[in-house]
Image (cartoon, rainbow, N blue to C red; front, side, top):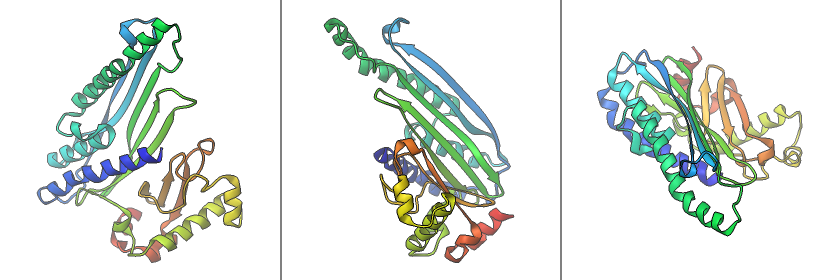
Length: 279
C-alpha cells in the first residue's frame, strides 16, 4: 500500500508540470466551473464464457463540462484524467479516456490470466483468485472562490484475503492552476511543530492523554505520524488523510485528522490564501 501511495504522489507531482506550463496563458479567475460525470460499469469473462471468472471495472469520474475559461477547463480536465487514469490520457476527452482505460483494463486482464487459467484447468487445480475488480471514483469535493478540492477513490481486488482501497486529494489553486502543497501553506521547518499538533489532535479525537495510549490502540504500528501531502482544505481547516497501512493496520481503516486554521495559523506562510478560503 505504501508503495502505491508513493507512486500516486509521484504521478501527482509529474502531472502538476502540465499546469505550470499553462499558468501564464490562463485568466486569473475561478472560471465559473460546472461539473458533470461519466460512468462505466463493465464486466468481462475469461474467454468470453459466462461460466468462467470475470473482471469488473466501475468508474464514476466528475469532470468540468463548462467554464468561463476554456483553457482552464481543458487544463483541469487533463489534470483530473492524469491522476485518475494516468498521464497517457491527458490529451484525450474525458469520455474517450475512461472508455479506453476500461478497454485496456479488460484486455490486460484477459492477456494476463487466460494462459494461467488454461494451464490450471488442464491440471485440474483452478484457484479462486481469478475474479478481479477495480473501481475509480473522482468527485469535486469542494469548490469555492479560487479553490477546487478533488477527491479520487480507488478500490481494487486482484486475489488474496482482501482488496485494497485508498483516497487521494488534490487541492488546486485556480488563480495559478497549480496544486497546493504543504510548502505552499507553511513556513520552513514546519514539520516538527505540525507533527505535534497532529499528535495532540489525534489524542483528543480518541480521548487519550499520551502517545503510548494511541500506540497501544494500533496507531503508528505501520508507519510514523508525520504531515502528509494527502490533505484537503475547506472553510473549517485542513484535514490530513492517512490511508490504510499509512499509520495504522488495515482493520482500523483510514485515519483523518482535522486541524482548524486557528490551530495552525502561527505556522502559515500564506495567510492570504487561507483568508480567501475562510470567507
